[in-house]
Length: 326
Image 1 (tube, rainbow, N blue to C red):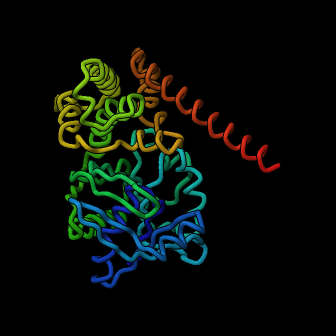
Image 2: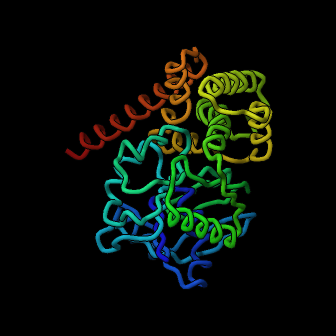
Image 3: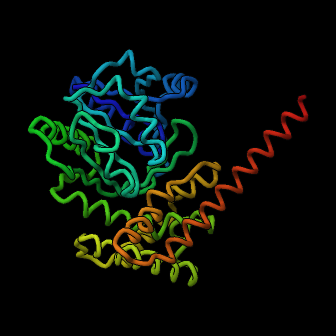
């Protein structure tokens, strides 16, 4: 079996580091696909540095930057950010065949129409994970918190696709992850969305860890409003909610107190965030079903303003460099 993980970000490196030993022991092939040639060379040289509980391990993983030389594979896990998904799929086309299982592992719900939007040749699977992963440097990932990964189909897969997803789940489980195959993956995606809706924008705006949100009355109050608003939209969309989403989000803040959310990581690296796939998705779905979403709209507005500010800072720095060297 041949598995490719597209995207050497925090989640991609975490999965690669954990899967690689098990894949090798089982006689399977694992590749990490990276569109950046220089970074691919670096990761081939240094391996993936996997850090957990203060221990650092070096795991060799084959990294490739040319999908043409790979050819069609059995499973392709896409771990890139939601706003990079379309370009990533285009880049990955040479490894995709009608028999390839595509597994999408993005935050939010903005990618749920990817099968129709991108004219995929096969019914994809979706995964939602509460594993905590922080990318400290290229290829250096800290496993900051344990969780569970739910995997399943929103559409109607063939027997081969179901078997491949079962095999992937088994390999991930044998690699040390908690994995559950779900017949109701949509509800799991929404449940994770509630957590992201409350934690991600606020940690980015306040520049704080997940746990630090609990120390501020203003942050806690705003978190509750964001999640409650998302819940209202979800119910209007026909999503079953069986738990207290606010308490679940607060519990995640506590259990991952030292974690740096993906959106805060993006802020600190001055990169585009996934705000449109998370809070922006709540706003769009709210408009579709006639539910007002002022708190999520405000979060989107503030994050977008933050992105514009550091984009301008980056442009100013580039202009200063050109001037000084010109």
